[in-house]
Amino acid sequence: MSDLSNVLEIAAPLAGAGGLGYAKVRAPRVYWSLVGMPVTWCRLTVTYRATMDVCGLTVRPSALRAFLVRNVARRRDVQPVPPKIRRVRGTSTGLRVALRLPAGLEPADVAAASERLRHAWGVHSVNVVEIKPGVVELRMTGYNVLNRVKIPRRALRPGPAGSLVVPVAMRDDGTAFVRNYRKVPHSLTLGSNQSGKSMYQRNLIAGLAKLPVALVGIDCKRGVEQGRFAPRLSALATSPDEASELLRVLVGEMEERFNLLADHQVSDVWELPVKARPVPLVVLVDEVAELFLVSAKKDEERRDRTVMHMIRLAQMARAVGIYLEVCGQRFGSDLGKGATALRAQLTGRVIHRVNDKQTAEMGIADIAPDAVPAVTSIAPDRPGVAVAGDSSGGWSRIRTPELTPAAAVAICREYAHLTPRIPALAPFRPAVRPDTAPADSAPVIRPVPATD
Image (cartoon, rainbow, N blue to C red; front, side):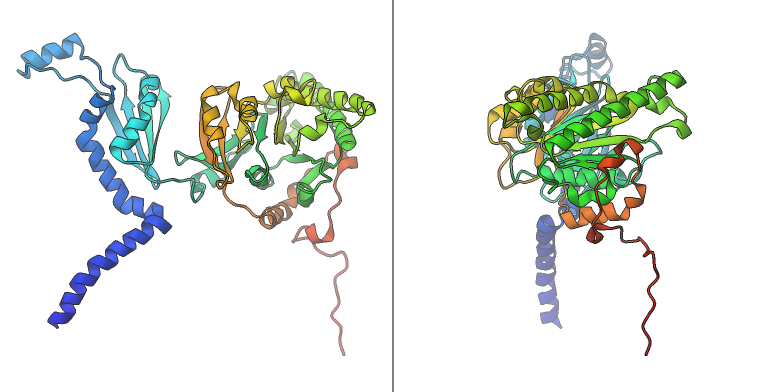
């Protein structure tokens, strides 16, 4: 019996250590909740004041505070004042620490010291977000959340009616990256081959397929990328000539919607009554360079006409519920006339791994110059990792979860009944093949079983 007890005394700690080691590699959320978060919380509590002091995030106390310390507390030395901790909250990926900044500090000071705070507290990353004037939040992650992407369940819940919010990827601070079309109507996505750009677009289409919106595809590679999503597409153009004609029709649809707004004396489609409101429309351009490049002089007129239609949509279509999602490998002034004018209208930017620094600068340097080094440092063996920015100047690293083409097609089949039929787009409605027909579609003639 004593031998068995000795074996158990030795085996139990070994099994526990082995289980924690396995959880650290295979289930980092579990390891962080059991071990990482308590240790980091204690380290933060014990070393907070000293860490803030050595990181230069303390200020001289006010005259009133110094007077009270010397005369009431009877202390001769007056310590510098660090930011006051307002709240500490643990999550499955890290810690959230809300700080009240003293007079003399700004959020940029805390952001500049984020790398030093990361090493001091032994976490994977520290991101600084301003909540309101004078209050910032340190979003610390205990492990690399971009290794195994899992979008939080809260972000996957359907939003209120009328919201066009699609969770697409995971940020490096543990929050979900979403495409909110009412806040960021148009977006540009760049990336080289095998960078994860198609995966990003696939996740976006799968998310949009579940919403009551019309999807319009422009895939000049004969539809090899978007043709499989035909059950959920209201229109599809597979050549530059078809794309030019489709964009002309979309401009006409935009003008009809502006007439509707004028009749109701409103300036936005979301101000219309629900019964009179047209369905939102998202235009997905797979490879924008194909719309700019020409092989003969006779094609220049078609190119100029196409670019003019796209610029008009980017400038005015947001008010009538038409949104652009433009993708490509490279996008800049070298594409031709109108390229930079179109890019200036695309507020959102998602840049995957690119082949040269100039492409990264074309995509994001005009809105977030600090993000260019982050784009050029994306490793080739990290498909799906990208840098997302917007016109506010902020940016973050994101990564899209893996979604197979078959899974995306299945989602489009499941929600094919949500595909609106817009009369103006009827000539461009893609034909649905039998193997991509909706799974719940009933046959016209009920089969009769054969009998002997």
